Image (cartoon, rainbow, N blue to C red; front, top):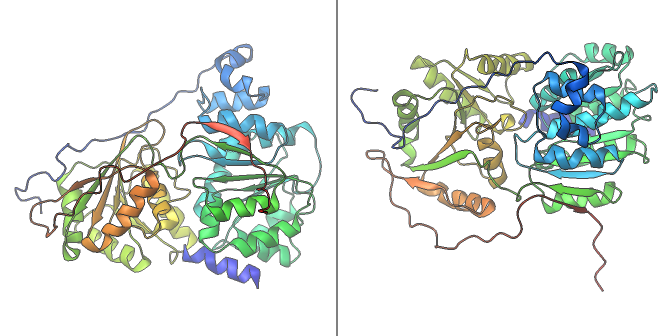
Length: 451
């Protein structure tokens, strides 16, 4: 029953003389190419001194060098030593900051130090796209021959996955529903798991995976290392951590809910009937390189993609009604530049790793403020600048204010002429208050019982 519910949750996931709508001017962000330097082994530690100081071994340093990693990101700098020390960890950082490498590098090193049979590391992810991205990163970083990863996701052939498991797997990367399906069939043994990773834990809870997570926890050994990574930390996440982890260390490298610092944010106020018209003008009047358009529902994503296709845009879409091969093809075409516009529901906000997304357009304001942060985190990655545009109606202004409260900052408002928008009173001069900021590490201990 739990597996069936979890599986269901996975599937929920005219230029004619007009003036420019973006007064600051559109800009194009391209992907920076890195050349693999042919460097003698003796100089690897010198080139990757920061990574070496984290306690990583020669094999991991060579993998970092081959991928062009020069300096650890803040989450990598703080999380890697904690994981290598064997501590449980809660890692919180904004999207696009290298969280996957922060747990894969130390896990791979620990697995290489001793050889044991069975599944030794289990990584849970909320969406198929994120699981596929983690497996890609594992393949790039793994240096141990014979250590195989198997990916278990819905929408893929189960018989093939069972065959892959029978061939042996050291690391399993999975979505909760398919993992439990195979465990209940007796095709997957989790009794040897040494490290459990819950990636994007906040999204898994949002998607209703808490019962599935608790079931998975009952299948893995109680004596294990647990790593929980998330872009936001809610009360539910902290409650889950206290009930499943052993004195975890909290590594938080940015204020919770903070938007990516390299993203310029703008909100255009329009009437409800003018939203599509503005979207078309933005895409047709501005020199946008690669655009990710977010819609709230699958139906809306389908409608927008058909409209854009009729206007000769190179467009595709991704949502939970699309088959796994269709979703993979859409992402591949977007990464390769064959598709200029990708229309998506929030299922793509996690796990979409494309450095050169120049613009994110929120056709609908998300109902959950955290989803806005994840959406716009798809641009402004890998040190590049990005632009996030939100199309807002008067009925969505309340949701936009909630987003601003979460981020602790205001979004610039624009009322484009001829789109029926109306002036909304600006927020109070000091509407937001934040405590803390910057990077820190502390113990995450249970609260004392109230007296």
